[in-house]
Length: 226
Image (cartoon, rainbow, N blue to C red; front, side, top):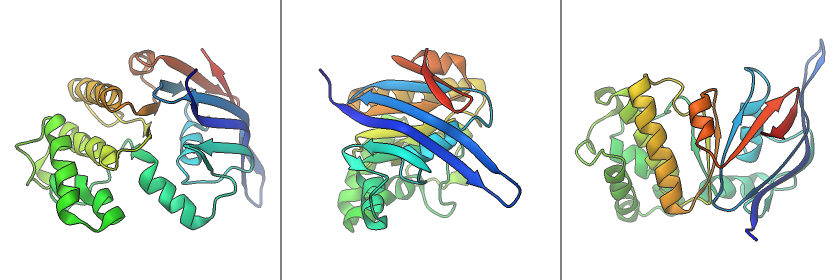
Protein backbone atom coordinates (compact mmCIF):
# COMPACT_ATOMS: atom_id res chain seq x y z
CA UNK A 1 0.00 0.00 0.00
CA UNK A 2 1.32 3.43 -0.93
CA UNK A 3 2.28 5.85 1.79
CA UNK A 4 -0.04 8.81 2.29
CA UNK A 5 1.89 12.03 1.73
CA UNK A 6 -1.04 14.38 2.41
CA UNK A 7 -3.28 13.68 5.40
CA UNK A 8 -5.95 16.18 6.45
CA UNK A 9 -8.74 15.76 8.96
CA UNK A 10 -11.54 18.17 9.81
CA UNK A 11 -9.79 21.17 8.27
CA UNK A 12 -11.69 24.39 8.90
CA UNK A 13 -10.97 27.94 7.81
CA UNK A 14 -12.85 30.97 9.08
CA UNK A 15 -12.19 34.54 7.96
CA UNK A 16 -13.20 36.93 10.69
CA UNK A 17 -14.17 40.57 10.32
CA UNK A 18 -16.05 43.10 12.42
CA UNK A 19 -19.18 42.41 10.38
CA UNK A 20 -19.21 38.61 10.32
CA UNK A 21 -17.36 35.31 10.50
CA UNK A 22 -17.13 33.72 7.06
CA UNK A 23 -16.58 29.96 7.22
CA UNK A 24 -14.87 28.83 4.00
CA UNK A 25 -13.81 25.27 4.88
CA UNK A 26 -16.16 23.30 7.10
CA UNK A 27 -14.25 20.14 7.93
CA UNK A 28 -12.26 18.97 4.92
CA UNK A 29 -10.80 15.46 4.95
CA UNK A 30 -8.19 14.30 2.43
CA UNK A 31 -5.69 11.46 2.18
CA UNK A 32 -3.46 11.44 -0.88
CA UNK A 33 -0.87 8.76 -1.55
CA UNK A 34 2.69 9.43 -2.66
CA UNK A 35 2.99 9.81 -6.45
CA UNK A 36 -0.73 10.40 -6.92
CA UNK A 37 -2.13 12.87 -9.42
CA UNK A 38 -5.26 14.60 -8.13
CA UNK A 39 -7.49 17.51 -9.06
CA UNK A 40 -9.90 19.73 -7.15
CA UNK A 41 -12.74 21.53 -8.88
CA UNK A 42 -15.62 23.57 -7.50
CA UNK A 43 -17.44 26.89 -7.82
CA UNK A 44 -15.53 30.17 -7.71
CA UNK A 45 -15.01 31.36 -4.15
CA UNK A 46 -15.62 27.94 -2.60
CA UNK A 47 -12.18 27.83 -0.92
CA UNK A 48 -10.08 25.80 -3.37
CA UNK A 49 -7.15 28.24 -3.33
CA UNK A 50 -7.47 28.67 0.43
CA UNK A 51 -7.19 24.92 0.92
CA UNK A 52 -4.17 24.72 -1.39
CA UNK A 53 -2.50 27.56 0.56
CA UNK A 54 -3.01 25.60 3.79
CA UNK A 55 -1.50 22.47 2.24
CA UNK A 56 1.48 24.53 1.06
CA UNK A 57 2.15 26.10 4.44
CA UNK A 58 1.25 29.57 3.17
CA UNK A 59 -1.78 29.84 5.46
CA UNK A 60 -2.88 28.14 8.66
CA UNK A 61 -6.24 26.46 9.25
CA UNK A 62 -8.66 27.63 11.89
CA UNK A 63 -9.01 24.04 13.05
CA UNK A 64 -8.30 20.45 12.15
CA UNK A 65 -5.14 18.49 11.39
CA UNK A 66 -2.83 18.88 8.38
CA UNK A 67 0.21 16.72 7.68
CA UNK A 68 2.06 17.12 4.38
CA UNK A 69 5.25 15.24 3.60
CA UNK A 70 5.45 14.17 7.23
CA UNK A 71 5.35 17.76 8.51
CA UNK A 72 2.60 18.77 10.95
CA UNK A 73 1.63 22.12 9.45
CA UNK A 74 -0.68 23.04 12.34
CA UNK A 75 2.02 22.84 14.98
CA UNK A 76 5.08 23.77 12.90
CA UNK A 77 6.88 27.01 13.74
CA UNK A 78 7.73 29.68 11.19
CA UNK A 79 11.27 28.37 10.57
CA UNK A 80 10.00 24.82 10.03
CA UNK A 81 7.34 26.11 7.63
CA UNK A 82 9.98 28.01 5.64
CA UNK A 83 12.09 24.86 5.35
CA UNK A 84 8.98 22.89 4.38
CA UNK A 85 8.12 25.32 1.58
CA UNK A 86 11.69 25.23 0.28
CA UNK A 87 12.20 21.45 0.33
CA UNK A 88 8.89 19.60 0.33
CA UNK A 89 6.52 21.51 -1.95
CA UNK A 90 6.72 23.31 -5.27
CA UNK A 91 4.13 25.89 -6.30
CA UNK A 92 2.69 26.75 -9.71
CA UNK A 93 0.19 29.62 -9.65
CA UNK A 94 -2.19 31.09 -12.21
CA UNK A 95 0.19 34.04 -12.60
CA UNK A 96 3.81 33.04 -13.07
CA UNK A 97 5.34 35.53 -10.57
CA UNK A 98 8.67 35.61 -12.41
CA UNK A 99 11.14 38.35 -11.50
CA UNK A 100 11.04 40.71 -14.47
CA UNK A 101 14.75 41.61 -14.48
CA UNK A 102 15.92 37.99 -14.16
CA UNK A 103 16.44 35.63 -17.09
CA UNK A 104 14.54 32.38 -17.47
CA UNK A 105 17.54 30.52 -16.10
CA UNK A 106 17.93 32.87 -13.14
CA UNK A 107 14.23 32.63 -12.29
CA UNK A 108 14.22 28.83 -12.47
CA UNK A 109 17.39 28.43 -10.41
CA UNK A 110 16.43 30.89 -7.68
CA UNK A 111 14.79 28.47 -5.18
CA UNK A 112 17.79 26.13 -5.40
CA UNK A 113 20.24 29.00 -4.98
CA UNK A 114 18.32 30.36 -1.97
CA UNK A 115 18.31 26.91 -0.39
CA UNK A 116 22.01 26.09 -0.83
CA UNK A 117 23.83 29.31 -1.75
CA UNK A 118 25.63 27.36 -4.49
CA UNK A 119 25.06 29.22 -7.76
CA UNK A 120 26.70 26.64 -10.03
CA UNK A 121 24.78 23.74 -8.52
CA UNK A 122 21.54 25.72 -8.85
CA UNK A 123 22.26 26.42 -12.53
CA UNK A 124 23.11 22.77 -13.11
CA UNK A 125 19.70 21.77 -11.70
CA UNK A 126 17.68 24.47 -13.50
CA UNK A 127 19.18 24.15 -16.97
CA UNK A 128 18.03 20.56 -17.73
CA UNK A 129 14.56 21.36 -16.40
CA UNK A 130 14.26 24.34 -18.76
CA UNK A 131 15.47 22.14 -21.57
CA UNK A 132 12.87 19.54 -20.61
CA UNK A 133 10.08 22.14 -20.92
CA UNK A 134 11.34 23.23 -24.33
CA UNK A 135 13.16 26.41 -23.32
CA UNK A 136 16.76 25.38 -23.92
CA UNK A 137 17.10 28.24 -26.41
CA UNK A 138 15.43 30.79 -24.12
CA UNK A 139 17.69 30.57 -21.07
CA UNK A 140 18.90 34.18 -21.34
CA UNK A 141 15.49 35.70 -22.10
CA UNK A 142 13.78 37.89 -19.49
CA UNK A 143 10.02 37.39 -18.99
CA UNK A 144 9.08 40.32 -21.24
CA UNK A 145 10.66 38.44 -24.15
CA UNK A 146 8.78 35.22 -23.43
CA UNK A 147 5.22 34.30 -24.36
CA UNK A 148 2.63 33.59 -21.68
CA UNK A 149 3.00 29.86 -22.18
CA UNK A 150 6.80 30.11 -22.02
CA UNK A 151 6.63 32.08 -18.77
CA UNK A 152 4.45 29.40 -17.22
CA UNK A 153 6.93 26.74 -18.38
CA UNK A 154 9.65 28.62 -16.51
CA UNK A 155 7.37 28.61 -13.45
CA UNK A 156 6.98 24.83 -13.73
CA UNK A 157 10.76 24.38 -13.96
CA UNK A 158 11.17 26.64 -10.92
CA UNK A 159 8.60 24.58 -8.99
CA UNK A 160 10.55 21.38 -9.69
CA UNK A 161 14.10 22.67 -9.20
CA UNK A 162 14.39 21.55 -5.56
CA UNK A 163 13.00 18.07 -6.31
CA UNK A 164 9.87 18.56 -4.18
CA UNK A 165 7.81 15.60 -3.05
CA UNK A 166 4.63 17.50 -3.90
CA UNK A 167 3.65 20.07 -6.53
CA UNK A 168 0.62 22.25 -5.80
CA UNK A 169 -0.80 23.99 -8.88
CA UNK A 170 -3.50 26.66 -8.58
CA UNK A 171 -5.23 27.29 -11.95
CA UNK A 172 -1.87 26.86 -13.74
CA UNK A 173 -3.37 27.41 -17.21
CA UNK A 174 -5.99 29.99 -16.24
CA UNK A 175 -4.24 32.93 -17.96
CA UNK A 176 -3.27 31.11 -21.17
CA UNK A 177 -4.87 30.67 -24.57
CA UNK A 178 -6.15 27.22 -25.47
CA UNK A 179 -3.05 26.06 -27.36
CA UNK A 180 -0.62 27.27 -24.69
CA UNK A 181 -2.81 25.86 -21.94
CA UNK A 182 -2.77 22.43 -23.53
CA UNK A 183 1.01 22.44 -23.87
CA UNK A 184 1.56 23.58 -20.28
CA UNK A 185 -0.96 21.02 -19.01
CA UNK A 186 0.87 18.22 -20.82
CA UNK A 187 4.21 19.36 -19.39
CA UNK A 188 2.92 19.59 -15.84
CA UNK A 189 1.42 16.10 -15.83
CA UNK A 190 4.29 14.49 -17.75
CA UNK A 191 7.03 16.05 -15.63
CA UNK A 192 5.26 15.18 -12.38
CA UNK A 193 4.94 11.58 -13.56
CA UNK A 194 8.56 11.33 -14.70
CA UNK A 195 9.84 12.78 -11.40
CA UNK A 196 7.52 10.62 -9.27
CA UNK A 197 6.07 13.80 -7.80
CA UNK A 198 2.68 13.97 -6.10
CA UNK A 199 0.59 16.50 -8.04
CA UNK A 200 -2.49 18.31 -6.76
CA UNK A 201 -4.15 20.70 -9.22
CA UNK A 202 -6.93 23.20 -8.55
CA UNK A 203 -8.70 24.01 -11.81
CA UNK A 204 -11.94 25.15 -13.40
CA UNK A 205 -11.06 23.19 -16.56
CA UNK A 206 -12.97 19.88 -16.60
CA UNK A 207 -10.58 18.47 -19.21
CA UNK A 208 -7.57 19.13 -17.04
CA UNK A 209 -9.34 17.80 -13.94
CA UNK A 210 -10.28 14.66 -15.83
CA UNK A 211 -6.64 13.77 -16.49
CA UNK A 212 -6.06 13.22 -12.78
CA UNK A 213 -6.28 9.71 -11.39
CA UNK A 214 -8.20 11.05 -8.39
CA UNK A 215 -10.75 13.83 -8.73
CA UNK A 216 -12.33 15.85 -5.95
CA UNK A 217 -15.03 18.53 -5.78
CA UNK A 218 -15.06 21.23 -3.10
CA UNK A 219 -18.55 22.55 -2.47
CA UNK A 220 -20.18 24.17 0.55
CA UNK A 221 -16.91 23.91 2.45
CA UNK A 222 -16.60 20.13 2.09
CA UNK A 223 -14.44 17.96 -0.17
CA UNK A 224 -15.96 14.97 -1.95
CA UNK A 225 -14.19 12.50 -4.25
CA UNK A 226 -15.99 12.19 -7.58
